[in-house]
Image (tube, rainbow, N blue to C red; front, side):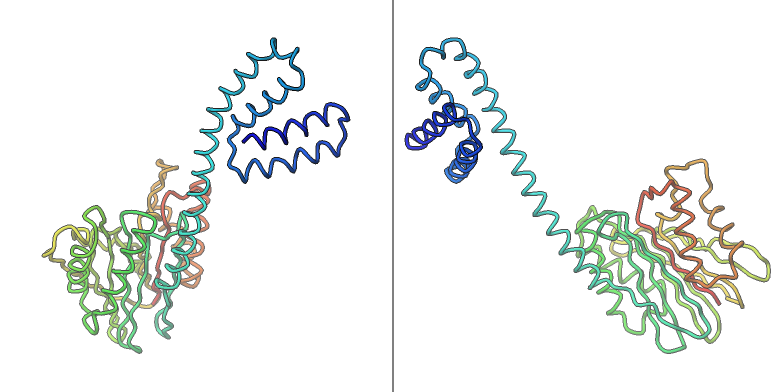
Length: 331
């Protein structure tokens, strides 16, 4: 410290004599030594005070209290500054971890939409933050059966992504049992109940379409009801199915229902991020959805999904409150 004080005194003395840009440049370079030695802001003020006292001993009596005041201020400033820098470093580390986790989620939970001749499939899933709390999983065994799971985790961030990974793993181990919606939900419920924290719950709508016979079977675990548009009647019906959220009780049973799909019929499956208009509570979200689809039913399933996202986002002043996921099957 004495060596630094001597150096600073020389630099300040030279500046008071010449006051050139070169003197300022030397002082600026000196700050690097202060940083390397981890000298605090209050110590820098103290070094300056001591240097001024030695260079101008007759002028310090009046300014001494001002320097003491500045040192006290800089003590608290230094503490706050160090805390701020620590928070910035932690935030940078968190941002890096989130970036890695997001990339892993995109890789592990990537959804592949199957292509069928008789069924037009559309899907859109947009996270409100980096990590998506929604997940869609398709099964397709040639042309005989098509199944889809639309899932929403009650929670966000990395824990939700890890939970989704368990859901995907459970779905992929079902084998041919994926044709039975009730059984699928019961299996996934046990997986989540055993392997996930008690505060983490999952809702799921699961449907299986017998492509040959046009029968759509479905079951729900506390999920947003899907919609069935019957083209010949030009009407919508809600696919209600009672069932407890996944991960609450280990031996929960789920019932399934089935409907018949005819030409130009639609099945619209979604998460509650589509139907909860928190910014516009006076709007009936399901009326908005059904009106949009009815007016544009000639579009492809994917075009309908994109239209719903665009219009609902606009209706909420471009401030969606939750992850937005829609899957549409068009016969």
